[in-house]
Amino acid sequence: MQAAVLGDKGVEIRDLPKPAPKPNEVLIRVRASSLNRADLLVALGHQHGSVGGVGARLGLECAGEVEAAGSEVEGIKPGDRIMASAPGGFAEYVVTDAGRVHRIPGNNMSYEQAACFPVALQTMHNAVVTAGRLKRGETMLMQGASAGVGLMGMQIGKLMGASLVIGTSTNADRRARLHEFGCDLALDSADPSWPDQVKNATGGKGVDLIVDLVSAPVANQNLEAASILGRIVNVGRLGGMNGEFDFDKHALKRIDYIGVTFRTRSAEEVREINRRMRADLWPAIEAGKLSLPIHKTYKLADIDEALALMRANRHFGKVVISVS
Image (tube, helix red, strand yellow):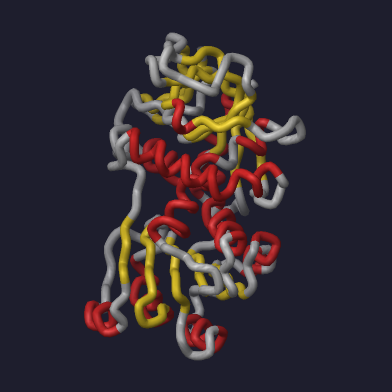
């Protein structure tokens, strides 16, 4: 089978043996995959959890058909149309834990559309609902809202009853589209006054929940925009890993600052995250109430072009790899 692998001189397509599923795993015939920021790190030779370095396989999520299921797998059978978070998903075949696998609802959702969902759904349900503890009627802000996970996070917030959803982006064209994905108020995080705009929109209180995909350059502004007893969930660090942090402001407002990642989670933890996500969100997925835009689709052979597009940050929504 063909798969995208990091070689000595960059990402290359190699012929690899077709994998076999373990008792708790599913073998997927991949039809489409989608890119995530972590793929850029792996492509540059950096470590992402247990994946990294020369020989690392790229990809975090995919959609396709079940080719085979391990002896301990229940409720999933060969031939099922599925989507899954699956390390090494830029390949013709991939194996993943059965707890990461979801049936594609109905017959109208394409593999390309389905491949956009798994990482965004599990990441943002965990960030907004479990770690962020969003309650109906509360307000939330998505920092870095035009990323695929950001667009999904705003929709989840609205679905779970947020009274006001604010999204930030430094790009005016992207801000203009955020309302299509659950955003009530779009702000420019490059404008120093954005925390004041948040306070104005919340009657001076500040937002109850901030889900942050940017981190370093906006960390102190997040503290300013948050309410007393607010929560800030650190999901991504697109703006940098290190920066200034106002510890006094953090203490003064008694803010819960929560870090999340899938890199240090056990298989059991990921299964539970997906179980909770399905319980809350699957009816909305089946009804077509949650969506992500596809910016562009590439063939597996053109993976370098897809990575370059994401690296240049010229996309809105998801970049997809068609494998079939």
